[in-house]
Image (cartoon, rainbow, N blue to C red; front, side):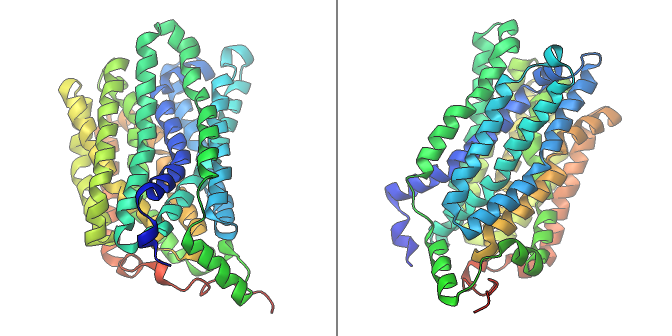
Length: 443
């Protein structure tokens, strides 16, 4: 099927926007949670020690990541068995309702220890939906795209979803400006989460208007012809566990870096850089703009030099710039904006090849399941723990260098492992015939 002729103009825009709707909501939630973390700490945990309350807030954030691999497996199974579009339509409801419910939760002062429990339940629901979003959406765009423009189209999708983080930061900035401090801490932060409801409605509508990917439709026909059953989870674990493990190791740097910007940078700038909340929000917004720019720049580059070289190169960039970027950000003033911009650019450059690998290194029959499982395990191990490890490392070392060294080490590991992972990354699994790795039923 010739996707080159089909994936152009208005149809291209419609598919990318529909695919990015749930991811926008997911990253919007992350952006909001990060910038209001200090308020959540005060509202949902005992106020005896603000540092402990903040650690508890990020502990809930980390525990929420437990649900991501579960969501990845569940929605990946739906995506590989029943279609990418169906998985996308269901996962967005989990993502957005988990976000919106946080806006109506009672506080610790109102219901005591039940408050952080309910907060955790909301994070688990949001994380489960988010666990199925990225792999489904990236596979959807990847499979609609011509081979020569896959990275470019996926970069547009990723950049669009990163706008969700930017919108979360911008909206928080607007609310903190137009409301008094008491109003913002009483109900303003709740409105930020309640935005999840219209996002859910809009996303479901958009996704109902697009067609399934041509590659999945070919897979369905091949399964019917071969009388083969779809067993994506079993096949992913039995036949593709090696690339799954390689993916987790190679993208650990991105998993940590993604939460450094999304849910930790604002708090870092306030607590370490000694910025007030308005300045910290502004620096975070600048950083997120650089994330979007870096992602768009890497799209055509990755199409030209290939996935492995693009991921290895950006891993080295992170290894070199991690410590200087956070050191600058810790200095406050202009340094905070400069360091935030550099770390944002690092995230944007690394994001495209790391996320493109979700689809490119796995075959059609298990693409969403294997990609979602690998991505979400990496995010749970290295992303979900990022903020709490960051707070702990900076507390132990008395400065920003602990987290910076940790991030630099993971970036270096990315580059080193990719040197030995040519077989996994230097080919396109999409060329594998659709039913080569589908389990046969009894004829």
